[in-house]
Length: 92
Image 1 (cartoon, rainbow, N blue to C red):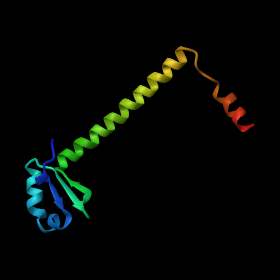
Image 2 (cartoon, one colour):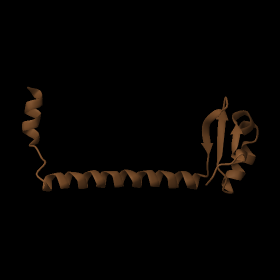
Image 3 (cartoon, rainbow, N blue to C red):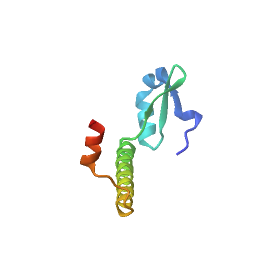
Image 4 (cartoon, rainbow, N blue to C red):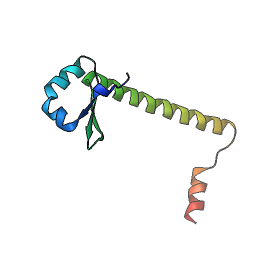
C-alpha cells in the first residue's frame, strides 16, 4: 500500500482526531504519525499487525532453513572442524 500525504499526520493532530483516524485505519488506511516533523509511529489495523508479525516469523524460519542448508552443504563438502578441538585451540 502506498502512503499518501493525507496519511501523514502530526502528533498533535493525531491526538485531537484519534477516533476519526482509528475509523480510517479500520477501513483500510495506514497512518504515519510524525513528531517534530519526523516519522514517529504508525497507526495500522490490528489484523495487519498480526499479519506483519506472522510474516516476520516466517522470514526468520526461512533464514534458519537457509543457514541449515548451508551447514549441510559444508558437511557434504568436508568443510568441517571438530568442535572440541577448535574450542581447545581457542582456549590456548
